[in-house]
Structure formats: C-alpha cells, structure tokens
Length: 239
Image (cartoon, rainbow, N blue to C red; front, top):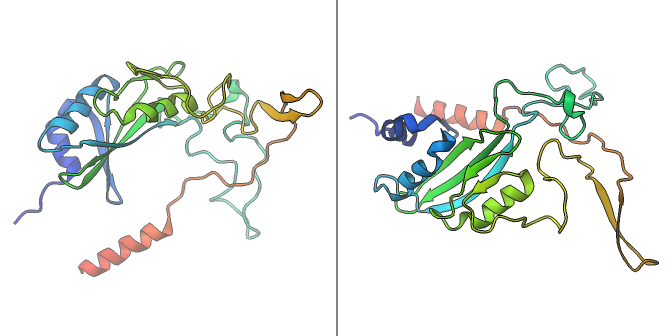
C-alpha cells in the first residue's frame, strides 16, 4: 500500500501555476505564491472542502535585507571563541548606499500567513513577496479572514507594508507621530530619538539619541543540533 501524498504534494497538484513552490521541513509545510494570486489561493484554502483552512492564526511581515549575514565570525574562529565583528555590516549599522544585498532572495519584503484547519487538524504557512521594495504592498485578507485585520495593521506599522483594501489601515503599536517602521532592517537599532519627561517644562520632550549601538548578540543562521539529533533518532528507530 502506497503512503498518502503529503500536504505540499497535494497542494502542488491542485494549485499548479498559482504556486511558486513548496517546502516541507521539520514537519511544517510552506507554500509560496505570486502576489497576484494571493487572494485567489487564500479563498481556495478556506473554501475548498479538501483544505478547509478556516482559521487565520497570524499575518506578519518579513524584511529580508541582510538576511543570512552576520557581524560575527562563526565558521572561521580561533580556539579563543567568537571574535567581535567591527565592520558594521549588520542591519541598522550601515550606510544605505553600501547596504548588504542577498542575491539569493531578490525581493526584500514578504508577507507570511499562518493557517489552521480545525476540520483536518493541519497547519500551513503561505508566503508571497511584495513586488515593489520602495512601496511594498499586498492585497488585504480581511474579507477572507476577519482576524487578519489587526495582524495586517501590525505589519503595516512595523514594516511599512501597505495592505490594499484594508478597512482601517493605521498604526497600532507605535506612538502618535512615530517616523519610520521599527522592524525594518535599515531602521537604527538605537532608534531616532529619546523620550523623557522634563520636570521644568512639565511635559515629555524628544531629544537626539545619546547611546551608541553595540553588537552583543551574534546574528547568524545555523543548524540546531536538537533537530539533527531528533532526525538521527527517527532514522535509527525505523531501521
């Protein structure tokens, strides 16, 4: 008896040209679609009896600027441990003209939605890249999953991604008059201004930032030994 087709394989068969590709890793399924197919695929995933992804768990933005780059030496280090990077290559510490570029990911901004099917007890991650890096946009999912309302406002607030057709697209986390989008990789890690209460003026005042950014946490992508051990144990159990 043949094994049942995986979720990614079945989605590939039904969605066809609407999908860019799919990935199954560590028990999770991710599909990538073109932005012009964003709403069409979302409706199929919600309404088709084969899928029934009726619940939207999360919608988030992603900024792939400098993705996979690090200021720390990780693969070429001495016996004394990690060396501190001093080039200022990390996000928020470079001049825009000399910004890092990842040629493996040509588009900078993406929108990711996490879906749950209560009927089939399956989860799915769907991603699409915004066409324009200067003014990233994506059709709103609010008409399909109303729960996407506040999630899309968060992505707009923190990443500057415009969700076309959203009924009330405005900031939701940052303060009134906030300039910029704090989760963008080119946003200064120390921020743009400091805020404090001035007892003489009896009001809150905004001042230039007085601290210097430091590299305290290594930014790198590496395999987690816990997953490698679990995979080895599964393979050993099947033999």
